[in-house]
Image (cartoon, rainbow, N blue to C red; front, top):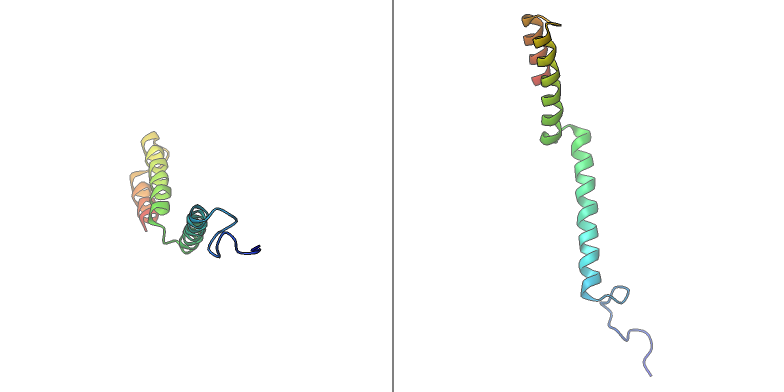
Amino acid sequence: MMYGYQYGACSNWGFGLIGTLINILIAVIIIGIVVRIIRRSKGKDKDWKFWHSNAAETLLKERFVKGEISKEEYEEKLKVIRG
């Protein structure tokens, strides 16, 4: 009788090819999450910056339309938001 590697050395917990593909998928997801976190921490994630600057511009525009700030103040703050 054979004991040990009766299903082959490449099997992952008895799933074979499916288990290997699942492990690769999990690794890709983890790497993607780590890269996303690093990009956000360094401020290089353009999508993230776009949505936040857009919200700030919208809020600033609303304050200007309501008359809470002057045109000069609006333009000055808009320059700051856009960097």
